[in-house]
Length: 463
Image (tube, rainbow, N blue to C red; front, side, top):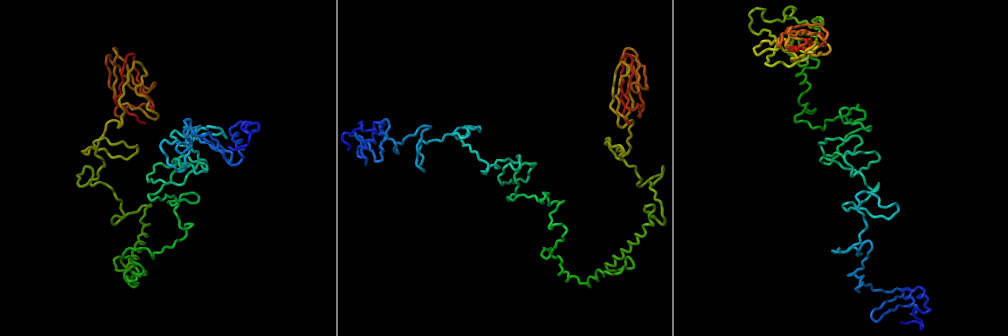
């Protein structure tokens, strides 16, 4: 190696080397001593190092076993946060290749990992998908909005435009709800016609007009309308019926009426005759009205029509006498309202069905006690009365018992019996119409010291 005589590494003149004491400083000093230009090699007879003009030391990297590293076959492994290798763009992946992964954190919940201005990690969900926050104005919103979801004007975002084919829609959106458009099978949009005020048109109350006001006469031309085969037109009518033909077949417009109803005439003459006859009939009506009633003349003179049968009482009859209306029915007819017209109820032999007693009786009741003031039937209600028809009184005590029936708790006693001991008693019958109690008053029994029974087998409630 060329250099200055008497100058060596570590010499007092080697200021740079003695000052820093670093390998780089020593090598730089060596180059200075070698003349300051070009490059030189340092060798121990086997290995050597090259020092270039840029004062850089060329090095050959090897691992602890002496194997060269930093080649394509044996690249340098970069560690610290994970191992990995850098590859050229568009190179093929080989199994067992190591790559450097980006730092991420799996976090299901959306929460901040760092403060404003701090370094941070990316977040992924439980499936490993990278979470992305699409900021407002970046084309987001609307695509995930459910049908009939709440909609706020000026805030809720929508992505135009989608439609649904559904001709059997069963649920309608309400105020401030979003909804999908309805389309036809040909992808056409269903349209609802409305005016500038938002009112629906094209309906019976607001038809679509072809002019602004609805009063302008619209011209209609039949020149190009399709006509059925054989239809008459102005041109064909001229060959079918002339003016003279019309007058001879239908009569002139000024044709006079014939003298009699059967006289021959044209159509217009016949119409004139009918008009004359109607006028004559109308003129006779005032004379035929009696107190506003049409007076019909049966026969030669006015007469009163009597409606009657074909035979008098106890006289032989034949033919079709006037009958009393009725309806044969094995079952009891259905109940109607008060004041309604009804059919007479007949049996299958035509006999009228007549029921004894009230047509709508109440169910039987029984009561027992051993003192005065026993309520047998409660009050029926305002304006209604109990009608007692039939029943029985019995004594179950070992001694005779006096039992009375009273019109209310303090009313008049209407029936009393001295019932013998051990089952003695009597029947009572107030007829089919019954004993009418005072309105809205209960049936009360006064019973002596021993136990007695009152049975009402037939009664009804009426005004």
